[in-house]
Each structure stands twice: as C-alpha cells, then as structure tokens.
Length: 197
Image (cartoon, rainbow, N blue to C red; front, side):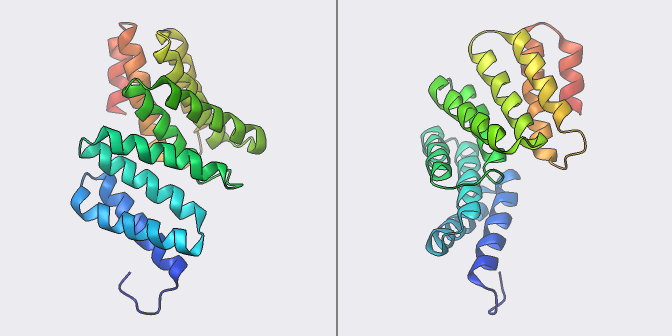
C-alpha cells in the first residue's frame, strides 16, 4: 500500500484485504476507507474478484456498525455483480455470509436468492468449498422454514465438506449456525461444542 511502484491490481488487492481483516476484527473506522478505496479502484480496472470481496467487507463493517439496511444493500450488490461475471470462486464466501446475514434479519427472499446463486456455482464447479457453502445456505433456509432438524443436517454436511479446505472463517460461521440450530432442538451440549470450536 505504501509503495509508489505498486500496480493498480496490487493496490486494489492490498487495500481490500487489509480492510477486510480490520472489518472482521471490528475495527470498522479503519476498515471502511480501505474497502471503499479498493472497491473504487477495482471497479475502475474491472477487477471483479476485488469488487465482490470489498463489497463483502463493507457488508461486514455495516453489520458491525449496526447499519442493517446498508449491509443488505451490499449483499444485494454482491449478487448483482456476481451475475455479471463468470466467477465461480471469489463469490462463494461472500454469498455464504450473505445467506446467513439475510436469514438472521428474517429476509427469506435474500437468503433464498443467495442459496440459488450458490446452487448455480455448485452446478458449474462442483468444488467442496462451493458445495459446503450451498449446504450452509440450505441450513439457513431450513431454519427460516422452522425445520431445525433439517438445518442441523445441512450444517453438518457443510462442515464435513470443509475437511481439508483452508477456510477457517467459513468453518466458524457454519459451526456458529449449527449451534443455533442445535439450540432450537434443545441439544445444548452439542451446540456448546460447536461454539467452543
């Protein structure tokens, strides 16, 4: 970021990644300008991967700041931008997260739209990470439908598909949401195990 010789691509990636890390840590005042800089630059140079990842970072920052409406706008923007690309990798984690965000705020349409996008990615790629994200999304929609038992099964599959895949944040999200589904079923000890993990 400090280098005067950095290419626009390198600058977009560096600012976006640093902004995302700070956003995940809850350091929203430091994260937001970096994410906005990355998004602006990524749009200018048509670097779709960083557009998707920067919008995801901004959604996380908005949620952390309590701005649910703005976070929802970012999630819908991720879906819209993804549809304009042939990406089958960079959108997976953002769509997984967006599904949970929509489910937790009671937006069934948003959650189901994310799940449908993930199903399309799985059809095209068949990769474990994408299949895990789809299972996670199906767990969220099952919870929305009041079927906690079915949700537990989907979250368990999501976690099993991540064996050997280095995505600790995604794994933690599925464990957290599996715990929520287990809690609904009164399976407190299992829920606590997931949360501790």
